[in-house]
Every structure is written in C-alpha cells, then in structure tokens.
Length: 266
Image (cartoon, rainbow, N blue to C red; front, top):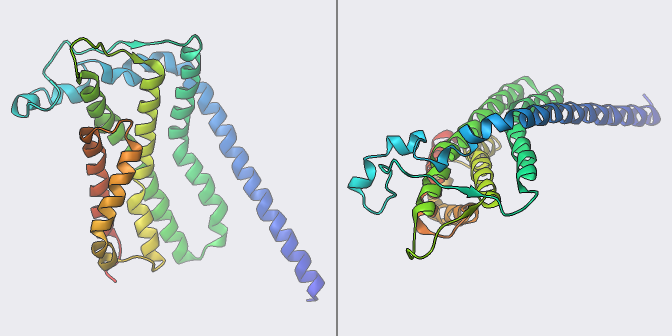
C-alpha cells in the first residue's frame, strides 16, 4: 500500500472518529434537553418535598438524630420539633431562574449514567478485551460512586451544615433571613461537588492500573493528603466554620482510605 493511500485511510479514520464523537455529543445533548424539560415540569412538585425538605424538622435526618443533641450540647437541637427556616426571595427574577437552574442540575444528575454509557460506546472499539473489562468496571464504579456521593451530600452533608448554620446565633438581636439564591447555591454546590469528590477511589484505581500509584505510595503521603483534603474541604464548604469543614472533610478522608484498599500493593 502506497504512502498516499495510507494517509488517505488515516484521514478517513480521523473524520470517522470525529463523526462518531459528534453523534455521541448530539445524543447526550438531546437527552439533556429532554431531561431539563421533564425536570422543569416536575420541579413545582419536587421543590417543597425534596429541595426544601432540610428546612423543616420533618426531614428524616433530623428525626433520626433527635436524641443526639442531648448527649452533645454543641450540636444543633435536632429534637426541636418547631425548627423551620423561611426562605425569602429578594430578587424579582430569582424564582424563575431558580426553577430553571434546579431543573438543569437535576437533569445533569439523572443524565450522568446515560452520558457515561454514550462515552463508553464511543471508546469501546479502540480498546482491547482486557481493557474493555477494566473500563466497564470503571464506568460502573464511577456511576455508583457519583450517585452515592450525591446521596451523602443530600442526606448528610448539606442538611447537617445547613441546620447548624441556620440555628447558629452570635446575638439574639440578629434574625437569620436566608435568601433563595443563597440556599439554592449551597444546596446544589454541596450535593453536586460531593458526587464528583466520591470519584476519588475510581481515580486512584485507574492510576493504579496505569502503574502510577500503589498502596505504599498513598500510605507514605497520607499526612500530605490530609492537608490537601482539608484545603479541598475548605473550598467546597460555603462557610469557613470548623464544624462545616469537619462534616465535609470526614467523608472525603474516608474515601482516601478506601482508595488505599482499592489500589494494588506495589
């Protein structure tokens, strides 16, 4: 085969891959648009029961921890049945923009496994059989860990920090009035970021498969990792208080320890 023919075949392969990538992105974009419309339609029914659920004492985490504040006085009074935070709107367009933004965030979360599937279909033809097994496991683990992170963010990290900060008072003369924008930005940020952060074990596993990290290395640099994770937790947290920092740091550190269990010995 002449050099000109080989060059032509390579060019066709390049444009073929580019076309496949284009259709992958088109499929993901169409699915996202459909999910945004569906989420937008469902949001009025979900907003009170799901998004605003941590603002009242009826939230299941508060009920489960109702006896904890009696043992640890520095914690919020989870046994307070009258806990309710009124979310106020101080911007004319905020309710409409919040409707759109929360619909987009919900669509992104639901879209995640389908997007992973489309990406998997795109890269699968270029992989060997052993690589296909490894990548299939990676995609499954990544999807599970992402949803687990979002679940931990919604059920533990956000309501714990929100309850603490909402009830914290430096003076009885000051009344907390939480705006809709402030609540939604913290709500979506902490949940979505926790989903991304829970991909840490997957990242460690992939780097281990590439021979870049192993158990002795992660154990050796554990103390440095603690400092880095503390900085990361400080970036994630919406406020600088030590309580919120600790609530966010603890699950991330446990993920680091879980990563050590996943990677190879050396």
